[in-house]
Length: 454
Image (cartoon, rainbow, N blue to C red; front, top):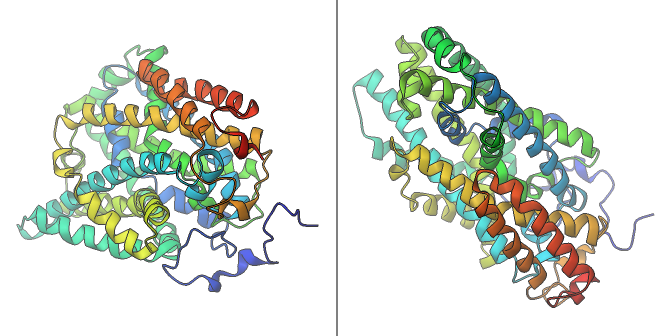
């Protein structure tokens, strides 16, 4: 029997792929699920080839050895998997996106804060990775045709991504599923090429050093985790597309194992090449690691393609849904605006030899805000709501979730200073203070949270 607290899902709705036309995404509860487990796995695999991971690896030169870097990445990916499965459960069960899920903890008006905090890093990464992709295409054109115009390639490249993004999750599904095989093959090739070219130097300066297992090591796990920490917030935007018959344990495995390969290869390539050459520009790095023209062109095309798969899944969808919720835009209009705003982040200023340290600071800073919001969402769903949501109320702007739940804001305010104080492990440090404050205020119906406790 269906609980009166739940919106019923029609029989076999997860198979009704034809009921959801291209690009017609909405904030309404999702009944037609278009992704099975394998499609979902490949979507995450193809969508997590972040150049930021390369930059994170580069920042660890002289701090960790090769084994410690690998373990830091593996631990970070496992933690990511656990949090993705945990926070994505509401979206998977009820078919609701992140901005609707957040209403039970922050209120209709209150979701603007977690929405903006999720959207801003996505826009920055969108612009950053688009410029990287355009740079790869420009270098490819120069190698083949002796032609160079990075601004032209940037405009064309960004326009292409905007066009793909308006296709919605149907477009994401085929793009990521097809692209993931090409991405992994290229990553393996580049990894082997780096070892062959710089093996002697790496043996002395990376494998042979002691490194550390202290705070810097755990800071490194958070650094790789932080690149994907934003997706932990809006994972419901994706899990609502997954067939219903996937258990939490399987979901954790899907998330961890899909993110791990790309993160390992990109992170290790970053620290290896930067150790050997001191170079942090990924285009220059990959170009120097390849000695013949056909393979160089293939490598550069991979870099460009990888930016598309990552941007469309991870950096376009979140701001799009946020603008749909805050301003009532259609999915297509919000997608186009997302692409334009990504350009307004001036990504060409981020891709400089000095940008590696700046990006690391950026990751640690926004992670300090992501952690408390994530803690509030998890405590709200599991401890306050007991994994049961009255979905109809989440769409009633005049109902119990109207306005702002100040308990959620107070919890975030409690977690952020702790995170900033312990900046090396900001994400980890923020979780417990925020979780405790939110649970205490909600259980005692303080800060005007009484009606949110129904």
